[in-house]
Image (cartoon, rainbow, N blue to C red; front, side, top):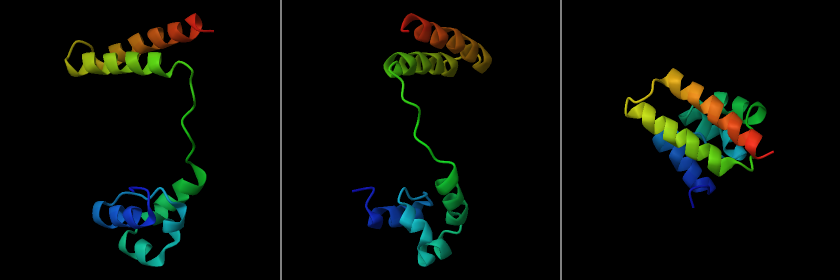
Length: 97
C-alpha cells in the first residue's frame, strides 16, 4: 500500500518524503511541488545501493543495539561505544569464519 504510486506521491507532497519509485522523479507536477526531487533523483540514480548482506546480521545488530542503549543511558560515551563495537564485531567475524 505505502509503495503504490498514489501513496508515494502523497507522501512526497504532504510529508516531503522522497519516493522509492523512480518514475515519480520525472513527474513534472510533482517536481514543481517538491523541488528537492531534483537532488533526490541524482542520488536515486547514482548513489543508492542495497545494504551489504551478512550471515552475522542478528549477532551484529544485537551488539549494536546494546551499545546504543548503553550510550543513551550514559554508561558509555559515543567513542567508548565505537571502540567496544569494533572489538565485539571483529570477534563475531573471527569466531564465525
